[in-house]
Length: 458
Image (cartoon, rainbow, N blue to C red; front, side, top):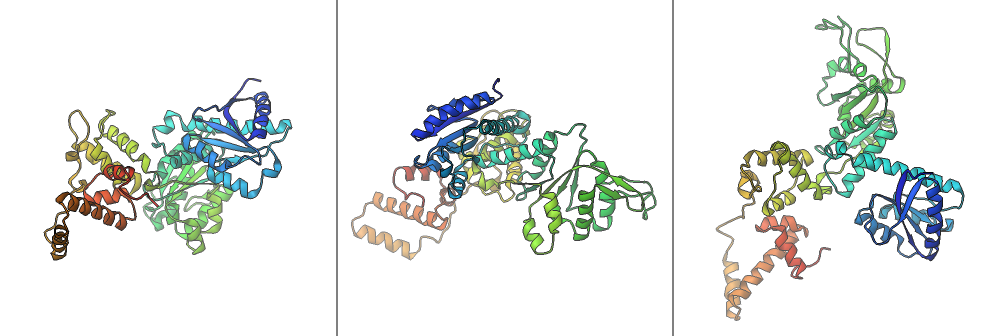
């Protein structure tokens, strides 16, 4: 049988090595090209065989995940090694699943199906159509993208996308619609629940008949009709009033609705994608969101990380937005500008970063990188100056140091060390924020730490 899936394999322990070689043959027969990982960096999906005496299996899986492995299947050689505690520890370390080995052909077919699915998800997640929309290479972000791709392409279940404002929830909703595998799929219909006027909400969702109310001069199709055979995206669904939640639940459950002012039932079938920046479980517990509706809309739940959870994506995102502002021309950033972007806080997440990048792009002219003078004035790092910080206590400390024979260099070094220690303590050890307060680059503090002049992070 020709191979239709690929995976790397490695073994931890003598017994696991013997099993690995035998398993490769059965996997090949099931359609998996399983290659041994001999010192190369792991790419794509993999299988880690281990025996009960394999040592720190979780640590090794963590290393492989850090080195670039996308998804890993952990396979103990003996079922006795598969305990609940071990399984959870391996998942926490970076494994995607844990499946005990057995010699039946069903084991190889089971693994082959899983590897084939993971390969297809990775292929879609790595496609230009996805990468050009959802920018980022951090592990957290790529995991979110893979979850979105899998939910979109391999299920037709409702999807609930959660996350802070500005994390890209609508982008993910549009991706889910575009990757939906339904044939003859119609368009995506977007309803912003924060803008729905309660007195007109019935018409917005259900549509209305001519003459249903004052001003209804013609029949109007609502969101449920427009989304038929397509996708209905309810942005900020947590803002819906309870009464409308009840009506939405009926449509989601039964697929039928009536227009406002009408008597006829109409059928609709759509995929539902909802987004919210609220904790809907907490809202339901407080009586502000229906439990039964929450269960209906959360067939799959995707949580998008905030930008502070994926800070390594800040510069790639900034370059992407700058490219957009420059008509696809590549715009580079000098080191100081990079430091400012990396150390800045983004309360509005990616939307906040995009706005800043566009402001920078409007100011940048000519060839060459963006320099600090092209940063907007309110984004520049200006060292604080004051006239009253050198008080009597400061002068007395200098006088005492001179009296004890300290040189000017020693006094300067001690003052520098003290200032850095104070800034780090007040910023909880965060190098970027401490550097910003001191008018330094984070790189300067990183070099001091590498040279042993700063304590290691706790």
